Length: 152
Image 1 (tube, rainbow, N blue to C red):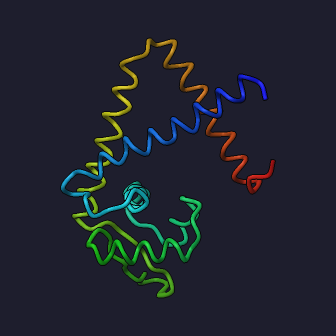
Image 2: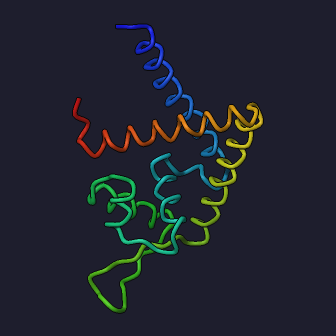
């Protein structure tokens, strides 16, 4: 295997692990301490909209419907989300953040903003543009790979 492939693989694996470890720091915040990273990401997804259905959440996060349903029920019991039936279509259940959920989303968003600002401060303008281009290409590659079902 060529050095490039080995180096990029090591870089991606190590970066992914590092990002998860850094993100775990936000969970040490008093408002987030009883949440997993997965639950935090569910709260983040819901927080981007005023309300979402369980199906919309599952599609947005590429998670199975039963997994999202179970996670939403846990978050409801923890007091971070609420579920409300639609008045127009009683089959539709809307998931929204409670005040506690909104607080957690703000803590998480602030964390991400500070993290990205710190990263940005270590690059000049040309490096920032190059990094953004590369990250966009990586994101596109992984989305296409995911859509194909991770075929090789």
